[in-house]
Length: 327
Image 1: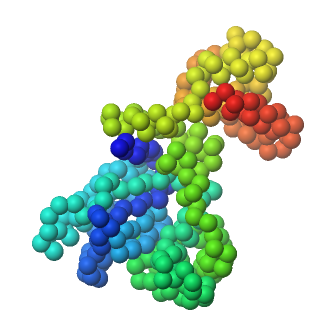
Image 2 (image 1 turned 90 degrees about the vertical axis):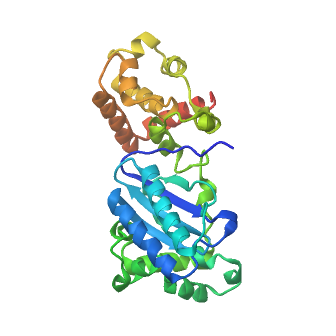
């Protein structure tokens, strides 16, 4: 089976899960749980990783982390090896503790960080024995669960040094507001956000997927099927350029020069970035040899203009829809 691809870049957010082999427990007592947190904290410090939320279930765990460096794989490898080695030593066992590699889902933080944090914190009351309980009882169970970051989100006195709370709390308006947000989720039965995952590895909009594609790198032969699945929706730049030139009523040669209107070049730059899995420097070469900074400005200006210019946004959406049909 093809391994999941890893997309790594500075400032990336991930929802990480890891399950015990054969669904076995990965902690046998609270001593194991405390050591797990101690080794996790060391790994966070060593690899400059910020943890926004977590929960420890009997046979698996969830982490919501931000990698300041492009090092999610190194961080998780170090942490999992450290805890597995200690667990095996303490309990006189050998072999794997976890079922395969960890799973890391890249998160569009602006859109989904708050929602994913709630999903993680409510994991403890999603088990079968809580399904028919009143939301009040489920809330009390979730907020009192010792092996979760929820308590620190609703009570400053329960905050832990190894969890960073401000970013998510600012999104919702503070600790009281976060508590209401979680309770509201219990009342309404909020859907699993990971049903919206794209390419088996990204929770985000199509625009977010397009933005992170240029961080993708080819892996080993085992990775190739997953790589092909991810890049399936990628157009060749020359094909897209020819299509956009026709849409704009100009030749490809004019489109490649500064003779083309700045708005047109901005639309083209944005769509090349979205659909062709190329960098801004590569886009610059296609548009007449401008540098990546000029491409960035073209894309930024077109996005800013579309926020206030309804006709321009409509034009972009129409062309975007027609481009998507080429895939």
